[in-house]
Image (cartoon, rainbow, N blue to C red; front, side, top):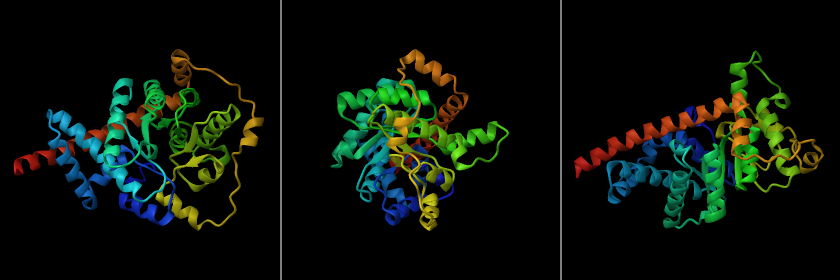
Length: 320
């Protein structure tokens, strides 16, 4: 689900949904920004702007309402095509504000419900900061809202998510590989030595060994080798480009991850309060850098989308 939009038009994402019939689909701010620029989706942008203006408030509130409506509109388009759930992301600029993340998530859910979609078909995507994980805990416990914890790179993040009893996590594979290629002397890795594959395997084994019900959905793949090395994982979110490659690959796929294997692994159960979480996460340089970088990139795309909406809103208001 990751920014394959950089290379593949978002149209192909919808085309891929038609072709490969996945169970679920996910969006992120970068995909929505790419889609919002495309003529095929201008009607969704225009509708969202009308909604934003109609709901009044300050310019800032109108823009925020338009953004939420737009994210939900894309989610609704996807839900017409998949039988399962869609993931919709809360603004990354709220990544360190638990209360605001909860409020924004509830607003997104309310917009889906207004459109006749039950909250069971929506996963709210939150950054896996300490605050994001606690927002997820509160949304699940108090509001019955399902969360998908994203930008997850460290084992500490995964442990905290399990303890928060969130519905699903999206541990990143490819972005971990990217970091190792950029920051170490090694430029190529066999799938079973791929640091992203190793990370997700450890998380899967930990969750299964200790009976956590949180679903592990590997995300951000760079090649089909990574996908195959994680066969057996609860769910995988795969870009249209890699889906096309996999559909041409007729070699047998063996489950690499199994509950049986996880029961035999030597991981110890740990508990992380906020202090321990912050320390353990901070010990992982890759995870610290990739979480920060991911938040900055999603925030930058949200700002670009906002600027585009402001400009269009202005022309709508001036045209009235």
